[in-house]
Length: 249
Ligand code: URA
Image (tube, rainbow, N blue to C red; front, side, top):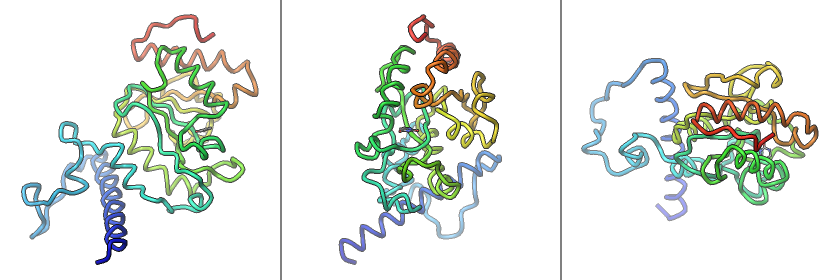
């Protein structure tokens, strides 16, 4: 096999194993915690070092690097055709707090990092007002590539990409998630309820408390929403045992 074919085969194998992992995690949630081995299947003793056996031994979770690798040069939806960079996520792989936005915008696409434009600067200020450095939390989006003209993501794009965000969250194992804006909140909670009704209380996302709040871009358009966001963040800080100061008002 030539080098290029071997690299392609590696990528395909990693994508298949990544999909298998998500399937097994979903099975585990329904109470199935093991599958019978077919005759001749390698056990962990006989298996050669590979993708699954590289999961962090102490937690049994796949690492963020492994998830990124399994995305490869992603072309699962057409957004891959127009991107400059795939925007995977940034921050502490063991963060107690994860922020999830919608999808990269222009600045993020150019830099390959989420929330680096004007809305991103406001998010950084919110994070700091909560008593964290940006590097202490983890920030990602539902979609990893920029939709053209910042249009809303399509259901087919969420279908193709959303499982990576869930895998990121599972890898990190945060104590709280903040969903930024209508699209992220409604997608993570599988609901059409307006963000104004979702925000202000914790919801359950795969066993993790999730606080929906307004998107920082919405705060740039309407500063009056800042008060509500700060109320939401105070609840998040309370859950994380952070001292609530008057800083964010
Ligand atoms: N808006 C988002 O939802 N995500 C980003 O990364 C930037 C802007």
